[in-house]
Image (cartoon, rainbow, N blue to C red; front, side, top):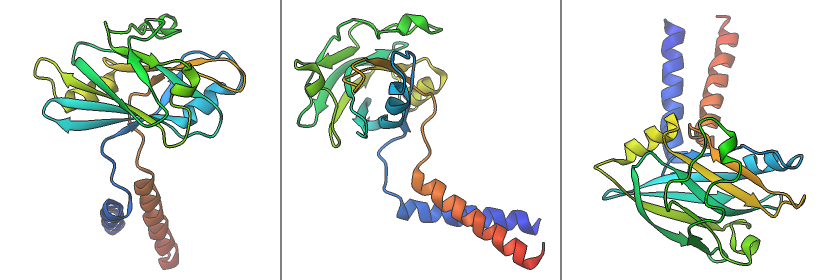
Amino acid sequence: MKLFKQVLCTVGVAMALAAFAAPASAGPIYTFSCITDNAPGDCTSAESQLSMEVIDDGGGLVSFLFTNAVGDAMSITDIYFDDDSLLGAFTITSSAGVSFSPLASPGNLPGGSSITPAFVTSLGLSADSDAPVAANGVDAAGEWISFQFSLLGGDTYASVLTDLETGDLRVGLHVQAFESGSSESLINNGNPVPEPGTLLLLGAGLTSLASRRRRSGR
């Protein structure tokens, strides 16, 4: 019982410290997994570099912010939403060096029909980079693109997060300009990644507790 209380205390302190030490995030961050495998190594690189932050803008507005932690060459050139009718009209904003227009070509995520259930792009909920395609995609550190949606039918930010978890809402990326010359398609993972700062502090707290336990011989 005493050890259990120590664990709770240590975890609680670590979480409190994380709130001050870790940079505040505007929303949960999701990673992506490949649904194609066109060239060896490209999927591994893409899965480690690409992310999406989902942000509550208030007033029935939700933003999806896409970034590329560039290490290996690649460019996000097409973005697709497979939705269960909670996303409405959207506007696109982006950093310098990124330029997208609505209605991606092709109209559905390449490879989307190969998974179960099939990825079906909702009518009009897609965009792709303007020519030159790779250069105007998200292909450099510090570049980003954001889609801000109005929510339909009284849906809420919580509804968006729930639908991402269940797969009722999926987001697809088509990524080009790999060094291989190939391209890959990815969809978001259902659960957000933990904040690194929180994990480090929790790990440090539990390691400290284990050390104290060994010294006390318990």
